[in-house]
Length: 377
Ligand code: FAD
Image (cartoon, rainbow, N blue to C red; front, side, top):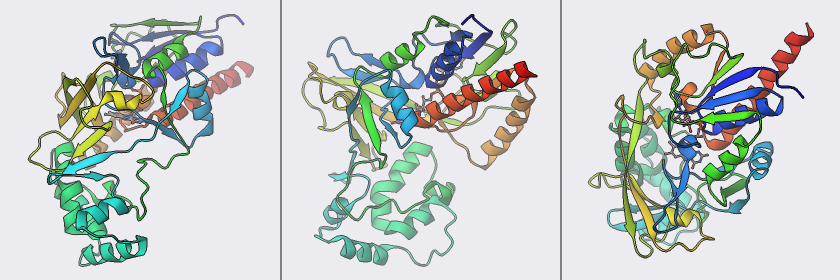
């Protein structure tokens, strides 16, 4: 099949790679640019030379999905090793199992409840004077009562979002965050795993197509799309418009890296609920690859703070003010000819990897279908 149209893709993360691959397979010439010096976006993994540990450079990434097509897609490029995310939490000098489950409840309250007893006990703990919870705090108090709220939600949420849980909407905590059994797998999804040789290797294989070229350390600015049939943009939506309507609010993360000779904490992720401890969690990366035997350990202490212009945007804040600002940017984006805004930054949403891939596949298909329709007219 001859090459059809030149397509520009901004961002060599999962969004850009998956869209680029689909269009390349359909015969288009795809040029992908990324301002970073590596592919993979925020899923980037890198082997630490000294210890051999596969490091999740921008924070821990666990693949989990119910989407069979997405699971087959990633397995088409990479072997996924079995991996279950079992998170622990340190609070008040004790280590507990998360999400809050029967083990956590029994340990925390010094009990040996069976499921029904634990359920009845928590109902007694719940604050029933709150009938119409408006804030995150009220919602948590109504679900789990003050003791569990203060141990596992209050400090963590305050550190993560930089404000008191009384300032966050109740909608953040939609369901009862408690399990009345001993299931400690963080995710319920049918398919869960970890790429055997890392996410970056998987994305490199997605990008490995004769119709795709990738230019790293190449920043894109609006106006540089002349000569291309279409632009798929996975950079920040507000950045595309030079922040003309102001900056969309994000939280950023700082990672304090340290190494350890043995096993530092015995698990991949340890949360810290106490507000006196300034970090939210510690990640020990070697536990993400339990089939490997590295020579040492690499850990990250993770700190969350407000995102400044020079920082990497991680979590969109999406409160009332940001959503209003977003709506104004969306109007601008819809008026932009020949551009599709995609991915976590292009749409200003938190997206898990499986959702990112699902949306990227759908976006590419829609684009190709519309082109085929136009060609037939
Ligand atoms: P990105 O990965 O951000 O890629 C965008 C790319 O665009 C970047 O490489 C950037 O350098 C480039 N770019 C931006 N602007 C420009 C420009 N102007 N010019 C050139 N290039 C540009 N998902 C899960 O499923 N499981 C997890 O456990 C999980 N953990 C996470 C933990 C953290 C801390 C965070 C923040 C996210 C996590 N995610 C997880 C979500 C996952 O990171 C996203 O789904 C994924 O990164 C989205 O891919 P993307 O391509 O849309 O964005």
